[in-house]
Length: 295
Image (cartoon, rainbow, N blue to C red; front, side):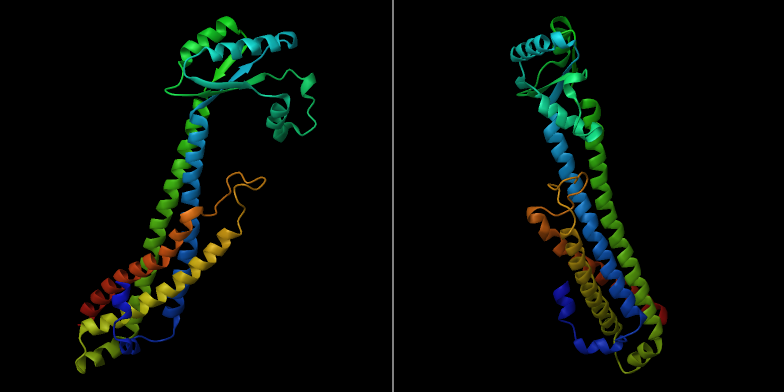
């Protein structure tokens, strides 16, 4: 489609005014929408990665929390680990060290938490294997052999997080669709304005034998190229803005990491082409309709 537009008679561009508010409107709209489309695409892909990571990391893990007097904590922890070793479907189990538990509590209580003097429960990480373990059976055995143990499968809070990330990904794709629709609407308005402003020129061209197809192709070519140039500039600015955003591996990067990963950097390159395609079909429709009205 784009090659066909570029191959059209460049002399027909003289039918379209080379300057004016329609030029600025088309360029600005295409650039702004492409800029926003880059961020919508980055948001959608980042949300997809987030949902996948949360699902993969939490789907096979659970936690046992042991609350017991200080004198019984080690005994109950050892009993729980021994029980887990005998449970089918449990791949591995380990008790968190005091340093690891302090690191988990540090964001809420600060780095100087006196962990040894507080009644902090002992946490045990459980990793499933195969088809997983029987959670109901494990709870019954824990209640009988380790009275202070509570099994948390992470299901209650894992599912809402994954669902929220999935909805955020869908919202990103919906935003891209709406951006494309808005781009088509603005290009259509600009094309209508240019056609209406050149009604007298169009009438003269018809008198000298120019066909409606020739006249329409002039507007289609000019507005498609304008949209392509504006969208390319907006896409490049968007990529630059994404490049300077914090990465997901940086400190305090929760819900950041909007940078593209791997081959995803190629996807924004299609945004100008899609914008040009939207402009092509929008302008073609607008030109045919306006030329019919001017007949």
